[in-house]
Image (tube, rainbow, N blue to C red; front, side, top):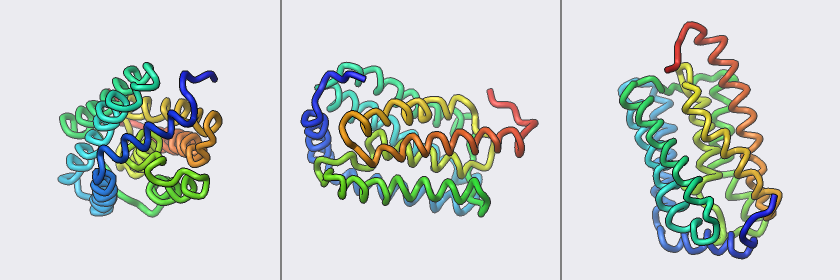
Length: 218
């Protein structure tokens, strides 16, 4: 796929973003750890907090990264950013307004897979990126689309409900679109994006059908 920018321009956007928003990267890590902990608590009263934080991350990606930085080299960023913001409102709608997106860790294939995906997003992704030559600030840090999408897929594997189809669509689409960076620009850590997407899709569809066959997602 042809892209309208070079790898140098792509990495420069990461640098400009990382330096401009520092120390928000640390805040995002703290928030991610917090919502994994809240999911472990298995309390419906805490689900709204988890969904609000996930919504914040996606709205941030759309408005700050895509609109504010990536749009300088790729006009498609306005399209991507709009979808990210939409995903944020999807979390608010299903998770807060409708209370239809709940979380609870269980030591089954879904919970264990979710933790593995989350660990990759928070630890494996930056480690692989570092050894691939993408040291900070020229690195896609957590809070940017690819690692945050992986993290989101991991959280959805921790869901204790039938995951609405609309919650899945945008993260799954980005797992395909974002993987192009792995091939075009040698962002090796993004290879885990497609793997996470396929894993999450297969397990969540199976769980929806087998564990929650009578639930209706609207």
